[in-house]
Length: 414
Image (tube, rainbow, N blue to C red; front, side):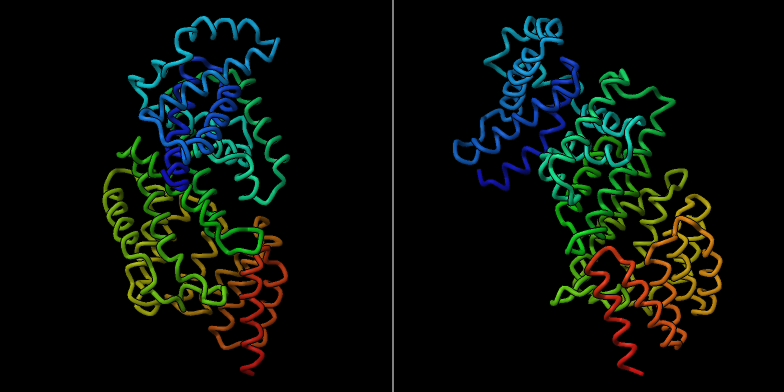
């Protein structure tokens, strides 16, 4: 089996194997280490020796052996190791019974809830989700977030220690906590996608690996909770947003704003799937922020051009979204939509009202929007000043180059 197919298979099986071990033996932190070592062994052996007939059973067996070794090496856990060994003595050379769990489909959902435990910081939730559920190695996660591997190792270790200290068992949270915990899971997956789609640091505009992993994980979640409208909405939002990815940069790598993008390069298949998903989700009860953002994305993606976009509908959707989500980026997007629907003066009046929002202090986004609206108004000198100021604040080199380019173009046109 080619290496890329092995990688895909291992990422699909990672949460299943980890769930099987933790459900049977407990010790989430040690099981996670054991599974990572089993995944590493498979990634080395399977491309050359062939994939086993029962790859999941192979992984569970190898991970179980390694789990026993890890527990044996820790004298403080001697009693638990003895209990595990007694329960696993006849299973060291065959796939354990956990290879065919009666409710294995729930394991990934339980893992997602566990990785997004409320005791963890958002950064730790993201890292642990990518490792335990996504099957990414610590080195891969560190590269994705541009931190040293040692730093990411410590972050993941601390997260596992916090879960252990919380006393959380491997089960779904109580019914009264599931909504809040699911919100945290969706938020983490949304952040992973956003970091991939608009990378906040590093030379690239996008991290395709993170985008693909976020979409894959939301597909898994949607398969587990197909009737949840917000899960459906988040999947639709990711697909509709990612569909525009191929047109976001030109041949020279320069950022291309949506209004100037070649829409023939947008992924029609993803757009059709995203529109179908959000069309299904919206009539099913209460409408949440991910559904509304997906609906906005659908209006953009179905429009033949920027001029033919139904900006009035987008303004209306943003105004509903603002009642549900106190998000400064949503407020800025609403400003742009109002400017497109009613003119730049109306947009600038709204933008002035956001000046006191401390969450936008130091961000290049407000200056970028102001520059765009001033350019629409014909005030090229002030627009150029704002573009230059925004370029200095931008953390993404691709965005910074784009903003400097807009300022230079205005200077040349004067």
